[in-house]
Length: 258
Length: 294
Image (cartoon, rainbow over all chains, first blue to last red; front, side, top):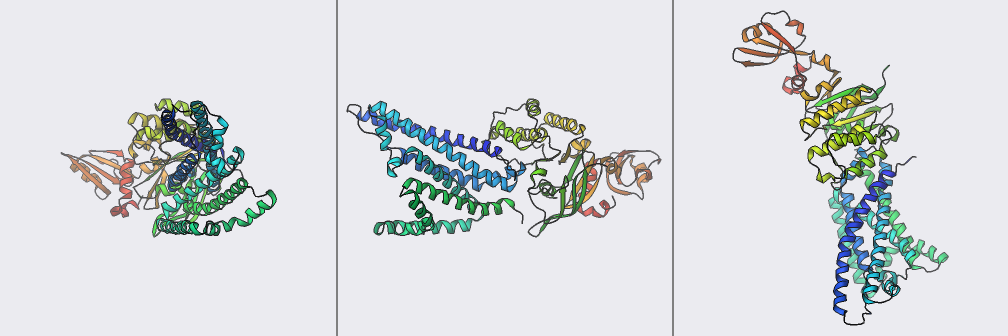
């Protein structure tokens, strides 16, 4: 089948650029101000301190992406635009996947730009080694990620977050009662997870992870216990699962074939 | 034999208990401008959405260029629908919309789009939210015209447009239709203003096809009789009068039927009925019996 992808690529690039620009302006501004504040505070000293922003950027990115996805999913206009342009439903589904992937790409560019850019600013201001600042970035150190494996993992994390937001948006816009019930369920699971974490750190979380455990074991067997790859693959599976659910919801939502 | 662009047979569309389109059978030929008229909620947009594959009929058959349009790329590439309500994100730039359209419609004419932007005095670097209602309408008229699709559908496209821009649109529409390769369906409430464009008129009422005729033939369905009140009354006696208006000693009667019934009677003038008057008469439900005579 001949899928027309280019219109979605154009739309996705526009979306990604807008998102990236907004984020860089807001978060870049805040970060620079806080660095400047710290610089003034410690200007008299040798200044070995460095700020680790990456985790904050990433979680904020994720929230932004989630909201973006929700807005996109909740807006029936988005589908109707493509439908009125004569795109088929199958093309629209593939098109959304393309748009999420493009957005993920822009998020990673923005993230790496911010991380390295601000590390450079800090290294100049505090006269410290650039690499040592980058190496303290918590997201890299937390999972022992090198930038390349980070890109792999981050791509799928962003993609799945976007897809999750999208589906949430669809559920919210059409099935408000179901959405409410799902939120309650998620709340209960989260409560269980956090309370159990105190006594049994991985107990409840493993209940959720068990679905993906066979794949994780398979990967570990062949690739060794490599966190980054496992995270990436897990997120890929989650993304695909979410998109499969999304496909069902979306087909029902946009077809309106009664 | 003329190419058939659209063919529907016993088309029905039901939303819950409401029948939006009922037993709708029609055939449209290529290279004409069709006027689709109907009152609010008559089912015009539903019909147009089925034609352009946006929704499925509940039952019945629909063929556009010989095939079912639903999920059919080969057909959908040949159809452009410009809806009354524009659904693009308010933050989308007009330039980006035109760029996307150029990728969707195989015969997209960018030069023509640029020319129309100038004619409609639109800045393509503007976002949708920065345009007035009329400017948004003009922007999507450009999409409909520059798409160069063999079948182009305009659903109430002139909302908010000033008279000068509307006139430009009508002229462009005529030029495009004159090339003979494009078929237009134009749904509008501005009947008097637009009727000169129509070659054929489709009137839809509560989801049913009321009439489908060439404009000239349809306008022969009725006539105005004017003159002194007594003369007019004498001339129309026994005829199917749907309305009489008095202005001092003068009167104008609207009559449904063949005008030869009134020709030759003394002291009166006869003029063709307006499409709007006919439309109102045909879609007034308390006068249904009269309209059935057409």
